[in-house]
Image (tube, rainbow, N blue to C red; front, side):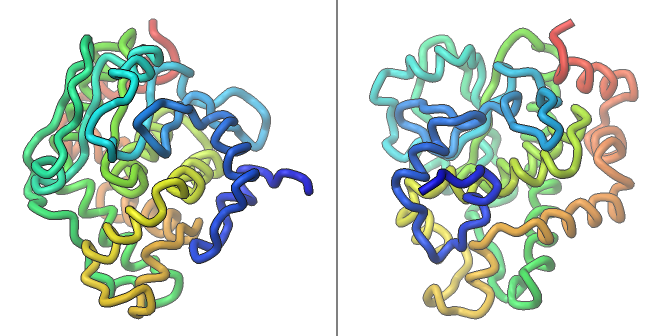
Length: 282
């Protein structure tokens, strides 16, 4: 049986487990990285593109992942250091961080800020209509508001420390992490299809933590069971939901650039530097 493409595999229905051989092949291929103690870990500079050209972001600089479920790195963090990561940004709520702070890694700075989100919760009812577009728009716009200080710190790192790789994560490495990844890719000039692929790849990357994340989603959404209306749409990643969110960013902020300058307060010169540093060190 031929191994499906990353996009085909990423479109696997969330209720259907991904075949082990296909999963291992995907997780062993760029942009995925094997880092002990992590899951859904990727180098945004290794994203495949439809044109076959290099990804917009330079390799070895920007990494995304899920949380660190073991509470410690089994290799003492050697895998993290081997990537060249100098700073880890934690995009989790107050409760999530309190229950399991990031493990210390020699030579790596840990950045977490207390946000207005005490617990990671969403309203499952917002996801009932259509393919859940409304729910994703509400959830992701909320990320841009609640985690604006975190996003600011990430962009300051890109602006000021272009020679130091960094990693950002939430619990699943899917939604909050996905919003920040989409922002960075857009600023770097990635096309829509590449950004959508990165969004969808969390379907593959979260598979090893399926049961843990299912329980997390049930608790955070308030759903009584997997059959609660809207819960399936919350769990299933779709292109239409990302596209609806991007339209909402354009509507509410005037686009990504305007969000960075108008809402986060970066200057036009800062924005130009951030875009340049995402693509090249100098």
